Length: 346
Length: 207
Ligand code: SF4
Ligand code: SF4
Image (cartoon, rainbow over all chains, first blue to last red; front, side, top):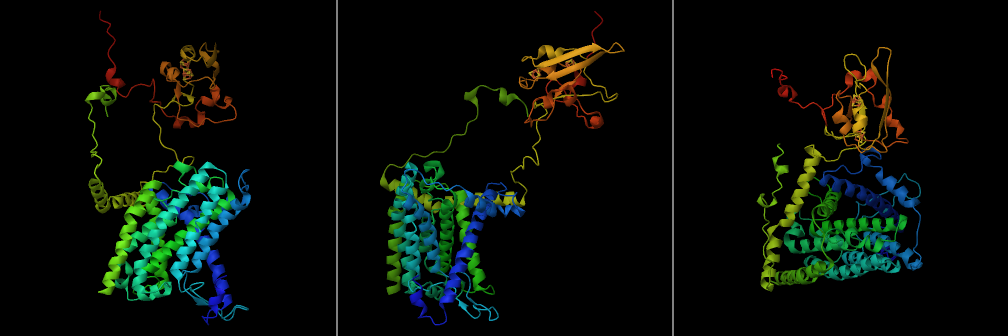
C-alpha cells in the first residue's frame, strides 16, 4: 500500500498500527454501511408515515442480517454477452476505492492498545490510516476513481440500460468533479495546506472559527457536488429506477450488487466526514463535548441530510445536472475563489 | 354527508380551482430571473420542512399510516358484501331460515342450492343449503330478498382456502350456537333501515 513510505516519517505510527487501523476501518465502515441501509429505510419510511422494517428482530434491526444472508446466497449471474472479466472487476473497483478513500480521512479517535494484550500490546493506532499531506486531493481523487466502477459495469454488461447508466456516469462525473475541486479550492487557499489535519487545526478556535462562516458559498457548492459524487437524490441519475431500471447495476445481483451498495454508503460516510472536517470544525472539542463525539454528530447529521433530501426532493434530469454544474455552480465557484483570493491579498 | 354531491353529474358548474400557472419565461433575462427567484425563495427548504413535519406527525403524534394487516385490520363498511352468514334467532337459538326459497329463486348466478322438508311438527326444515362460491358474484340479492334476515353478508373477506367447500355449507355459515351472544345484527344491504320505526304506518283497512 501507499502508506508504507510514510510510516518512516512518523515515528510513533508503526506498520502494525496502520494495519490494525485498516482492518478497523474495513470492519466498522462495512458494518456502518450495512446499518446505513437500515437507517435509510427507516428514516424514509418515517418521513412517508410508514413503519419501515419491523418484523426481523427488535425494531427490524436484524433486517440487515437477513439482507446480508440474501445477498450472499443469491445466485451469481454473469450475463451471456457480457465481458465477464470487467463485469466481475467493476464492483470491486467501487468498493475498494471507497475504502481506500477512507484511508485518507480521520475516522474514530486514535488510541493505544493496552500493554496486557499479547503481541499487539502498546501499538499506537492512529486516527488517520495514512496522514498523506495531500489528504483532500487523495480522497477526492480516490472517490473520482471510484466512478470507474459504474462506468465499466455499465459498459461491460451488454444491456441497454447499463449503457445509458454508464453514459450518465460519464456526464455526471464530468459535471460535478469541477465543482468539487473549485469549491474546495477556496478553503484550501485559506488554510494553505491540503492536509486534513491542518484543516482541523485551522478551525480549533471554537464555533466561530468554522470555515462555514467564512466560506458559506463553498460549503453549499461542496454539498451539492457531494450529493452528485455519492450518487444520491437529487442526482441519482446513474440508477434511477423510473428511467433506466437500475442503470449500471441492472444486470448485477447478489454480492456484486452488494459491493456497489457498500461502496455507495462508504462514499456517503467519506463525503460526510470531509464536509465535517473542512467546513464544520472537524474533530475539535466543542465546549464540553469531546471532539470524537462532535464528529460523530456532524457525520450523522450529513448522513441524515442525505436521507432527508431523498425523501423530499425530486431528482433532476441529466441535462439539468450538466446545466446546473457548468452554467451555475462552476461560475459561482470561480467567483468564490477569486473573491477569496482578493480578500486574502487585501 | 349527503349524497347530493355524488348525484351531481353537471360537471361544468362545479367549483374547480385553477392553478396559478405563470407563463414560461421567454427571454434569457427572464429565465435568469426565474432561476434566481426560485433559488433564493427557499422553496426547497419548504419541501424539507414538509417531510420533517410528516416524520414528527408519524413518530410523535400517532399519525402513522401503516396498518400491520394480518395483525390489525381496518374496519369495513357494514354494506360490504363478503362471504355469507346464516343468522340464528336470538331467543331460541334456532336458525332463522324458514325455507321459503326466495334466495334460491333470486340468485342470478344460480349458485344457491337448497332442499327442504317437513319435520315432525310439520314445520319447514332446511335439510340442505349450500352456496357455490365459485359462481357467486356477491351481488347481495339473496340478503336483500330474505324476509327473515336469515342470510346476510358477513365481514369475512379473507377467503383464500384449499377448498371453497370450506365456506359453503349451511353449518359453516350458520352462527355457532355457543357464539350466539356475539352474533351481530346485519345493517347492510337489505337490512331494516335505521329509521324503520318512523316509516311504519297503520294498515289502511278503513276503505
Ligand atoms: S350474493 Fe348474489 S350470486 Fe351470491 S348467492 Fe346471493 S344472490 Fe346468489
Ligand atoms: S330467503 Fe331467507 S328465509 Fe328464505 S330460504 Fe333463503 S335464507 Fe331461508
